[in-house]
Image (tube, rainbow, N blue to C red):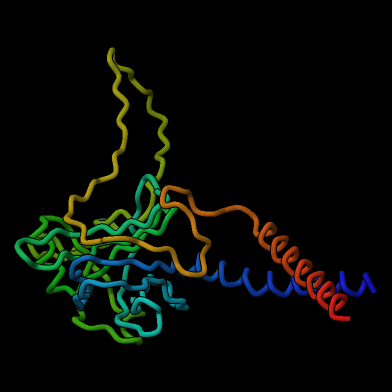
Length: 261
């Protein structure tokens, strides 16, 4: 009888563990993030009023970065936008939203989104007319698409370019750093000066009146402090805990039945 009860508890723990693990993996793959903006924020083709939103990557067979923006609980999609790789030298343990600062009372434009621990983020691609305005305002190169609006078919095939402050189109792959700098091998002799200075690459700092009030991890992820690195530990302790709870429940029921008899 004891063997049967033990087998039942082990089965219950296994089922509960199997139900939890797929949710955690799915959240890590689509970078699901809940973010609260204290002010209105502009995204490609839309202005989001102050509030809470859910950002996640769309699972698409196309080799593209497609970001879906939902309402706070993820029950309603608000807009779908196109993005490209945005590389940073040093990852952080927090979600980072960078903005293109705008003059006056205009909403700040969301430039890029980095998931905790990632060196690659999502740089948002704006419609060409809007991208030219942003490029002129910030005096920088901005990724763009020719279409003013994107639907499910065009978002997977529309060409992505980059526009300069003087309204010229350039190749986005050469204008925007989307990958780590490649090491260049050389056979030329290295001449050392009397006072050598090591050049250290520094990640650009975006100054912004960031309207982000707080960033909340996705509901399916485990709670953690903002300064912790992303969880990389095994899920076995969680399964063991669920198994222990199941065993305690079975013993409690047995005791209640014995008292009732």
